Length: 446
Image 1 (cartoon, one colour):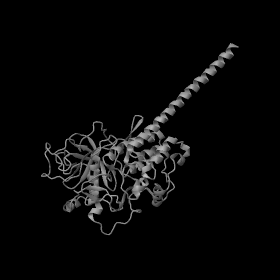
Image 2: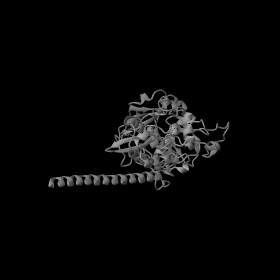
Image 3: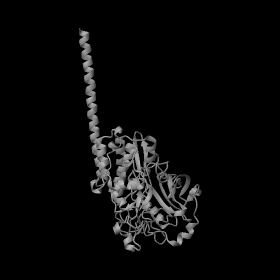
């Protein structure tokens, strides 16, 4: 059977479309061989052939719980400090317009849960620890809890039909009656279902149980978050940082081409696995992703002028509540690079959220090499990072592919310089050896 709205093929028994979030009824479903289906469609449950399997954790962000002094005021919050207050009464058209009053809104499908389901879901309250051992819709067995945040909890799980290990992201009970949160949860499923890049976490399924449990079935990952990697390994080698950025940019590039801005790039949302001597990166958590070119009827999920994201990594235009494009994610990735390269964010002396906002809005960022001179960060790394974090977005890389081309160019130049240095070193060693041999022959012949 197929979704009546986006025509994606559905798994048997699904109550929501994993691609567009549409609530399904028996009368609304289309037969799989319907003539109305497009010739090409994305299968929301398709698993790429090169998808790599489990078992590790989608970590719950600890950044918002960290002490302000310890994390330089790191807050995962809705920033409204710079936004104008919403008008006393706004028309529906103004609320949903992408340009209305410079609003930064997260959109979701109009199939948000109706009030009639509130009573049934209110029974599902309390801790999510009681999910362990349950079977969801006769498809997934819930295992141990591996992470938790304010939004939901993540459990190890197993798909019964295939035995595949998955990560089950389950919405907290107290969020089930909040239409905004439920719509954002669906938006994450919709955003991820559009993406097939190997550096983006795979979402297999999205559904709801009879007693109102909303869940996402996602790829289970090996490795650790970039945030954890930074804490355990300290500063990373400059070329390694550029290669991590390149893989993140590859994932973001596909999202941007599909009209999706991540809006919450931070080390907790990048997962790193070591494969031999190389890093393999996955980008996570499109829960507050913004669809740039969505022409369907939408419900605005943030107040007019409100901005979502994590303060330390927000671009100037995101703080101003302006419409965003992929260059905002590039800015956030550039700020992340400072922490990878130096162990510090570029506003390391900031003590309050207001000081961090002031840095993003007004202060020119220092070159990473100036932030930590003792690390001897190469000039070509400074060149890439400073372009990524330019205050004016037109001064940044125009898109993720341009950033990747810049990285490839400077790394190629670095390799050439390394080859030349090695050649000079070999010549020097051979020359020194020749001089020594000549000297020995001279003295022995006397």
